[in-house]
Image (cartoon, rainbow, N blue to C red; front, side):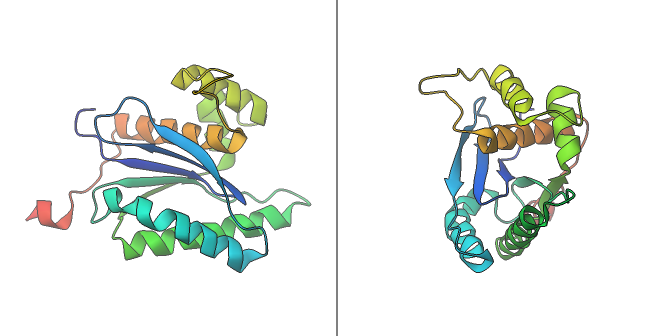
Length: 176
């Protein structure tokens, strides 16, 4: 896709995976960032401080943020709450930067996209992303952890959605 927008993929958690694909680039930048684990407010502030400068290329309707929506799992309410706090921070910052294009992906949908199984394990998603992005198990291209592989899966999901016809409206200045 020649006119693909910049895409930022976020696997929101205390250790947030991220992947960024610039327009025209074939390989994404990716990694994982540790957010302060001293309660919800500290995590949100840490995410906002990390995310703020990374939103400039996506601002004013030019880009797409794709993120994994919080999933509630029986007896695991704490990670769900963390995800909800971080999702609200992303939505707030996207609005502040006028990033109009957001795509939320449910955990099972992400696993199914990555592996063709909605109940895939973290290891299966990681293996699939190593294959998808040509990332080796060691060295410079190694994946940091499953958070980074989830972000790469989200990026792959966004690319597929764009390929399948997800339309991004032109930025306000371009529409005139």
